[in-house]
Image 1 (cartoon, one colour):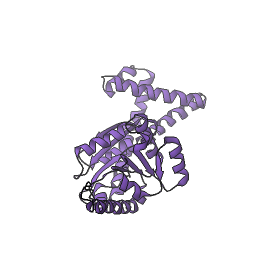
Image 2 (image 1 turned 60 degrees about the horizontal axis):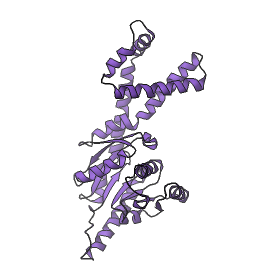
Image 3 (image 1 turned 90 degrees about the horizontal axis):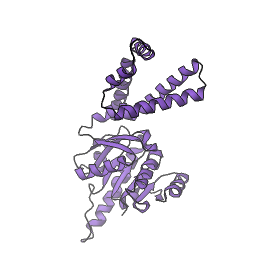
Image 4 (image 1 turned 30 degrees about the vertical axis):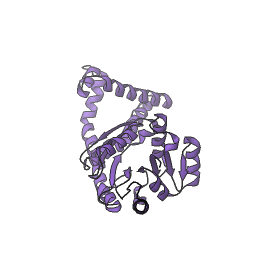
Length: 286
């Protein structure tokens, strides 16, 4: 039995597998990745030295835990395959008196399919299914991810700890008790990288309009954001206090902040995040 099987071998699955291997959470022989694309399977096998397959059911039958990294539009088909494979494994175990029982709740299923609720997954897999739903984000691909997860009633604290261990291999992860909070998580950390890219682009473009070369403007904007993030992380001061440290009375920073306030910067950010959260709720209902 593999310790962890991936169904779906896209960028996020590759990032997670790579992080788990680099952090020595698992060895290559502990993992298996299923993907429909033969070229993708060859790439993963070559880069990570892990077993790959086109057979989702084989992963479900032969992995102690399964990580669903498929597109939401494909989830129902994959859940049906998974349920059938689990039922088959359960029947095989039932015919072997000495073997471990593997009922439909006998596999831990961790899903990163956006918008797919725990209720939808347990409806397909059975009420006893050990399901953990996770909302990761794109910076996991560079080891700086932020994930939040919620476990279904059928999943244990040990299952939660196992899932946290996976996502902390590529950044940070937290456990939540209320699945409804994942809509806010999606709007903040899931979509958040795009907000950061937009702001950095805006800074760089404005600097270019002031005469800086484009490459230098982007370099300076990126380093400024990274330095500010690191300073804020290390400092005991609040965000408002840090702003006051930089914004000398009558200075350039104060002039810029006044313009932000006049244009309703904070309200725009709040409106954008609320729009993303509401869209996440809509997708969940669908």
